[in-house]
Image (cartoon, rainbow, N blue to C red; front, side, top):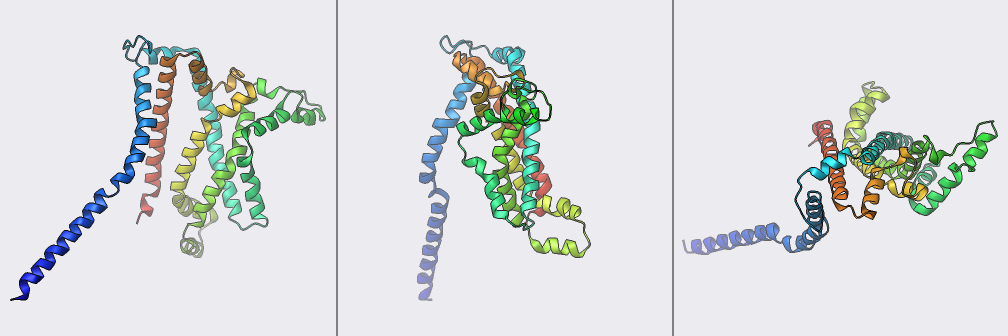
Length: 306
């Protein structure tokens, strides 16, 4: 009986120690998170709220609240509708091609082909090329007096000014794919290497065809990477403005007049209300698309959890 109080005291000490460890685990990371939270608020959340406020004012100086009037005027604007249509069409062409072609390249590289490392370096090399050099290469290739016209004219074809015709969108899509396929391919290669080989071996023993193995096994394990690559490709498709701007300046041919051209021109005219409304609408569209992709990824890969 004499040892009972000492045992009870030890239990209290252990309980206090466990409580201290739990509190430290729960709240100990807060000081390390505070700088990141402050940075996110200062550089992302607060500016986003300011943009929302500007989109509902008639003028930043007078500050009169007009509600959704700026959004109505924006949607009725012909230049904005043209820019949205061109950006959407570019994404419809470029994003599926960027994802599917990179997946096919990754599967090709996964076959243990000879000179595989050389092919990987070849497809990754565009990421190391500066944008100014890329633009110069494309100008040399697709100018009216460029290399492509010089080559095709040898077969009797007429010269075409690719960047000032309906074929301009195809030129930009090719440029986009050339720059982004390598990075996406590496992501798919990493995902393919992480698929359990014993499952594939069992499927082969069960006489499963390569198409069945791909669609029923590999594609399910690739669901997370597929969504990530799609999101990154979609985001990069909205960044194509930089290359288009350097190739064609402020007002390009109508088929490659992108949403960023409209936003950039509104900014140069200090039209903050239209600029802010366009940015908010673009953000909402991106949020909806990304949410749909995450839901699709969850439905495709839920049977693999655990």
